[in-house]
Structure formats: C-alpha cells, structure tokens
Length: 165
Length: 424
Ligand code: SF4
Image 1 (cartoon, rainbow over the protein chains, first blue to last red):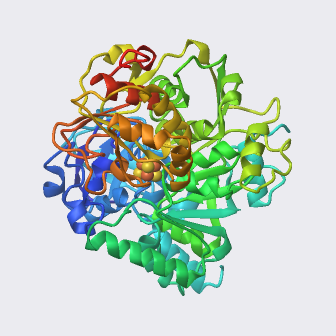
Image 2 (cartoon, each protein chain N blue to C red):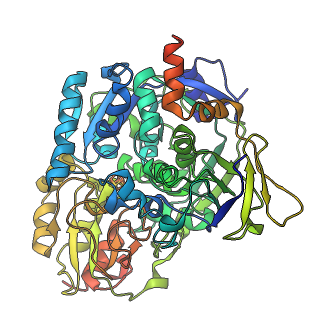
C-alpha cells in the first residue's frame, strides 16, 4: 500500500526524450531529473512528492532505451506508473530499476490531481471519492520477484550470494 | 507444429524444442552490443559490484558513436573510460569512431541468421534485417547480460507485414516505414516480433532492409525480422560469413500469427511525418511548400551508403536553396569511403553540403550541432519527438533521403519526383 498520494495524469505516447531530455543526458541524475517531463508539464519535477503516482494513456515510455527515463521518475520519488500500455524497453527498464509499472485499461477516469492509494500486491488503485477500485493487470510473478528485491542489481546480488550463477 | 522465425530463434537460444507466445524463458545471448552512451560508463559500476568481468569477451561488441567526436571534458572522459574498459575486459570487437553501431556491427559481419542478440540501444531491431532476433535493452539489464550471458524474454507473437508490388521511382524503405507508423501507430508493434516480407521487401538491398528493421522501434515492436535469402547471403559473403541452415530460418507455412497486414508498394507515395511523431505520416503532397531551414541526412536510419546514393541521385547537378543548410553525417566511415570512391562526397561538397562526422550527431541531440530555437528541419532520422534534436521550439519533419535532398534544393518540403532536372 502506498498511502494516500497525488496522481499526476499524462496523455498517450509520453516519450523518453520528455522523461530524460537528451540535452541533460550527460548531467548527474539529480540535474537530469529536474527536467523530467518539463516539456509536457513544467511544474511536475518541482512539485512531485515522494510516493506520488503517474497515470497515463497508451505507450508510456516510447522511444529510446535510456533507462534514465525510469531512473529520473524513481529519483523524484514516483512510487508507480499506471498506464494503458507501456513501450517494451521502458517496461523492462522500470522493473529492473525497481519502479512498479501496471497496465490498466481504465486510466481515462483518473484525473490529474486526484488522490489515491495503490495496493501493489493486489494491483488495485483506490481513488478518493470513487466507490469502486480500479483494477490493474498484476505484474507477472517472476518480475514481482525482481521488484521485491529492489530491482535487477539487488536481485542478481541475491542470486550470486546464493551461488546460482 | 509450424513455428514462426522468432519462435525458432528463441527456442534455439533457450534450449527448448519449441516455445509458444507468452512463455517466459531464459535465453543465452549469442552477442551483446553496447555503445559509448549506454555502455561502459553505465555498466562498469554495476559489473564492479560483482567482480567486474564480462561473461565472454568474444561475445561482446563495443561501438563509440554517440559522444564522438569528443568536444568537451565530459565527452573526452566518456571516450577514455570506454577505451580503457574495452582493453581491461579483453574485448577485441571495438569500433572507435568508425560509425553508428547499427551499421558498423553488420558491416563487420557480426550478425548472421538465427542469432539471438541484445543491444544497448532502442534501434537494435536493425539487426533483424539479417534474420537475427535482436532487441534493445537498458543499461542495467545489459549489465545483467554481461555478467551472466542470459536474459529473460516473453516469447512474442508475430505480426507479419507484407508489402506486395514494387516501389515506384524515388520511393524507399523509409517511406514504407513512415507509412506503416502512420497506419498502425507507434504502439502498432505491441512489443511483439514484427516480420517483413513480400515482393517489395525481397527486392530491397540489405541496407534498405535495415531501414525497415530499424524503424520497427518506432512501431513499438520488440524485433523486426526478415528471413534470409540470396541477398542476405550475398551481403554476408562480402563480410566473409556464410549462412547455415538458411532454409530453417523462416516462418513455417501455417504458423500462428497475431496479425497479417498487407500493403501495396506500387501505390505508395513519398511519405513525410510531421512534428512530433513518426506516426504523423502523410503523403508528401500534404506538406508541400512548408519552408525548411535545415536538411539533415544522418543516422543509422538514413545515412547508410544506400541512403547517400539516393540523396546524390536527387542532388546531382542541383544547387541548394539559399535558405537551407544541408548537413550530411554518413552512417559509417566505410560507407563514406565507398561514397567517396563513387564521387558522391565530391558531389555533396559541390552542392554546398556540410559533412559531419560518422556518428549519431544531431539525431541524438548530443553535441554542438543541435538544432537552435524555432529551426524547421527535414531529416532522414527515425524520430522527431519534441526537443530530441535540439531546442524544444525546433520542428522536425521526417522523410526519405530522396525527399530530404529534394527539400534542400527546393527550400521547402518537396516531392523528390518533381525536382529532377528542374534546377540544372
Ligand atoms: S543515429 Fe540516432 S537512432 Fe541511430 S543509434 Fe544514433 S542516436 Fe540512435
């Protein structure tokens, strides 16, 4: 459970150049993150609070393989992204970096600025004031394991120390 | 059970008799490709936590193409780190300032049909033109591959894109992909395996096929594969490679497909995608006379030898519009040398083009040539997201090398079929 947090709502095709602009790609992560999504919502990086959730339309994270796109969101404290669909490389990167990502057909009813609580284990979003929770697709068990370990690196560290490599 | 080409490659790499879409399997990679931007500087800190060495230095290829040539302390240190890491790891396949990874890797014979390959770059599907299952991953996942030689994959369904008929004059693979992006959208590939075939595809040379596979990234496919044929074998012979089991590496008749799209190449018009999405594609006439300031012939998508020849065909005997700067960044040093021997580089110079290094250049928005405020550019690159190639106020239209060259001559977005002869 995330507790009650703010939702930041975005549209379709949010691309990796919006999430991690090329111009700041060789800057340190905190500088890069300060520009995260600025071309779509100038107030986002300044005002987002740890725990907040992003909701979006189709094809979130489209574009480059740069994982700073997911890293910047994590750095800013975003606790999960819920979208109608994700670009494949972004989806893998997010899981590998320990950022939960949920596919959800019903993000249209979520509004920017809503407050909500996300149940990660049950893949359910409860929006304040709404009677029914919004069901998301559960993350496959194998990937949940990587997320639970905190991302791919800690997951591999566990495997290494267990001698499974 | 009839199988798709993607299923055959993944089954082989994961040591299974057969696999089915939706299965999550662990596969051994035949090759891992990384570049200077997402490569050593990002994977080294992770590898160092595990003892620091790659699983097999003979299966790793490294290309410096994003931050070259270095132009400040930051980029110089990236290049120095890349060189040192490659030497420390004992990696022999290192291409330093030889061109863009997706072009340099196949031109050196690293890809053959049936291989299962990962690349640390989103345009890694380019390798699919060789009947290879190749896809892009991020740096952390690449570090995992470099440590273990393995990666998990959810077996994709196959989306077949068949092009019947033949392309008309001055219409190219780039037009085919812009059209497809316009039709299916940037998530039309649904992170599945896209396979290209049909009479128009069969007739394309390898570099044009690479353009199809390359822009599978813009379609949102995981891989963009083309079954090998005589053209593939011929290209590989030139690189000193032979194709084994060529008849096996194809989709069986009756294999289960997710979708089968049939498009008619004979009816295709030159395509242009308006800012800020490759899916904003329409035929060139819809953007006729939109003035441009910069014409860019660059990138793995649009500055290979085949692309340079297309541009040269249009530019021959023409003068650039005084309102346009034409910048050409040949995709590889090898392609540039062949172009030079064919007289194309002299032709470009004579037309007034500026030649940039064999690197990603403006495409990635890195380096000093980034587009300035309010610049309108027509480009042979693959993506035109807001701010990618420079200032957020700049606008990028995408077109084929023919269309970009024609627009450089006209000063506005122009149909390449109408430029011929007019400016001689
Ligand atoms: S040329 Fe552009 S698309 Fe190709 S690898 Fe470089 S940055 Fe990526």
